[in-house]
Amino acid sequence: MREIDMIIIHCSASRCDRDYTFEALDNDHRSRGWNGCGYHYYVTKDGEIHMGRKEETVGAHAGKKFNPHSIGICYEGGLNARGQPEDTRTEAQKRTLTKLISSMKKRYPMAQVLGHRDLPGVHKDCPCYDVRKELSERS
Ligand SMILES: [Zn+2]
Image 1: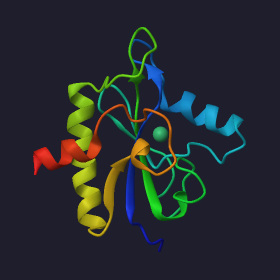
Image 2: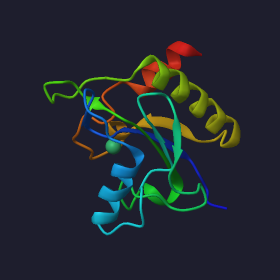
Image 3: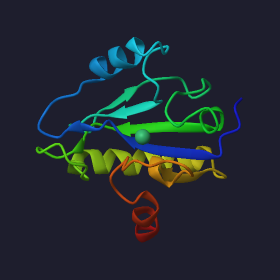
Image 4: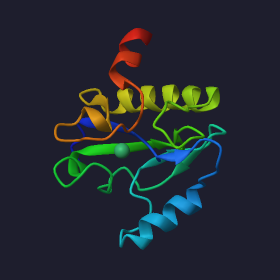
């Protein structure tokens, strides 16, 4: 078993008014030379969970330093209709993410849950919302 100490949340950086299906994501990651979808879970706008990599498999989502000991969860969106970074999560996505994160917390009690941008050295907006703030307000 891998030692998991981080659950890292991402957005797909796709526009909220366009569909970016799991198949499209999987293809894009393959074209980068990866072994398919780099995330473990992908949550589309309808709130559906799509299984990417198996949890035992190292993902490709947060760099060599963090991939080996983390799980990557990505939601579809993160850019508004003008292509600017924004929290575009639908209510269905928020519900699914809440459930998925709480099941991860049960299975990996020692893991911290954070956004991609909260990692040191990351200079992007992903996932376009404050993961830790939202979690602390909910509990
Ligand atoms: Zn990211």
